[in-house]
Amino acid sequence: QKEVEQNSGPLSVPEGAIASLNCTYSDRVSQSFFWYRQYSGKSPELIMSIYSNGDKEDGRFTAQLNKASQYVSLLIRDSQPSDSATYLCAGMDSSYKLIFGSGTRLLVRP
Amino acid sequence: DAGITQSPRHKVTETGTPVTLRCHQTENHRYMYWYRQDPGHGLRLIHYSYGVKDTDKGEVSDGYSVSRSKTEDFLLTLESATSSQTSVYFCAISLLAGGLSSTDTQYFGPGTRLTVL
Image (tube, rainbow over all chains, first blue to last red; front, side, top):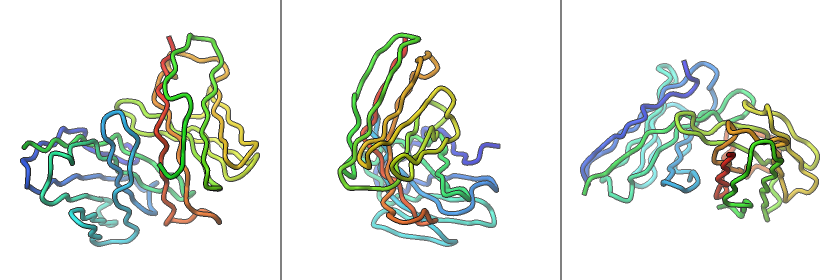
């Protein structure tokens, strides 16, 4: 099992819908979790961080963490074509290193 | 880009040649990282630095060396480039000034696309 696992996609949603991106992780990754957005040919850009169980909201974005199920998700409400990108999930291991998933490509259809 | 620049932005080189990539930051951040990104693998840590002359290996350090003689510069060297090192290389910094913690957040530079023929 990969330490941080994501479905590669593409996940295709219509404009205005909720996009749900999911990530599972192994026991090695236990500290904090981060969602990065990466446009094609660009560098990863931090969207959200989440450190404890539950939901964390920031604008149209909500991160959800469930440590018992080893599951973290990112919800994007009112999806826009400009949200089309690859979303990287990252978890922090016990030595504070980030371990990344391979990313999920999101396509928002106008 | 959190004040991070990388140079060169693109490079094509031949197998067996040495290559040095530079990461430069202007805000005196203590922690700096080098990652490579390949399709299907996401970002993988190569080396990192926690201060001048203080570096350590990451997950995929074989074939790479690093140096940090000044706070602002973190160099990644491929002593003898191989085709398997064709990748996009990203430098990152941590905003934390003291010791690392679970609330550490990393920010990435613009990347260097390296092709080894």
